[in-house]
Length: 228
Ligand SMILES: Nc1ncnc2c1ncn2[C@@H]1O[C@H](COP(=O)(O)OP(=O)(O)OP(=O)(O)O)[C@@H](O)[C@H]1O
Image 1 (tube, rainbow, N blue to C red):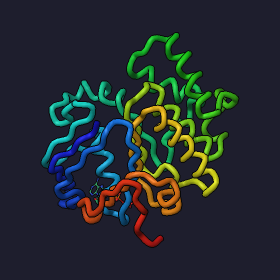
Image 2 (cartoon, rainbow, N blue to C red):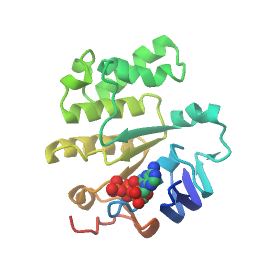
Image 3 (cartoon, protein in one colour):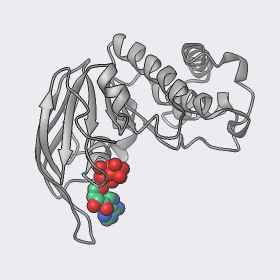
């Protein structure tokens, strides 16, 4: 479960990105985070994996109090949370297999376990046949699938996705959404920031709308609600 209690975030330059966010996301939910550009969606997501820290308020992920978490325990938190981004963020000098394995190597998983699990997640994202190629030899959709495999390799209970379809054409985006839905159906909580109106309005899920750093709407089976 993810819980934020009266969370505020002011960046060092004085920008108030979040203003008093209180929200609870239960295990196994699928949540879209929507809102205008600059509303605070990415900040909301960054706080959940401690990429950023709140100016005020409390955040719990699976009972871990993120504020109390020591720096050296952050890799432990990141085992519970997988993250995917709009621009994939793959390591260009590593192959697909190596990119995915790397996420397990940093948490010092045993070699044999890494080999087995990497094989499994590459099968899940249907990229076993591309295991030995480099990211720049892949399409955008394939790169995003590698990024998803990497995010899942440590069996996180939460998958955070910040505009995962932002760089993809509509058809490829639907493929990524099917994959995220499948992952969610297996019990992983998914929190996805998006500007994709069509996806939100078609695959109805909980919608949290943020405007000007505040939650202005939180609906089950909600709509995108903005013109694009
Ligand atoms: N590192 C930073 N330093 C200062 N201000 C920042 C920083 N990151 C974001 N901001 C500001 O905080 C506010 C919220 O930004 P955020 O990236 O969370 O919005 P967003 O809803 O994700 O926007 P978009 O849809 O355009 O990605 C914006 O005003 C932004 O300019």
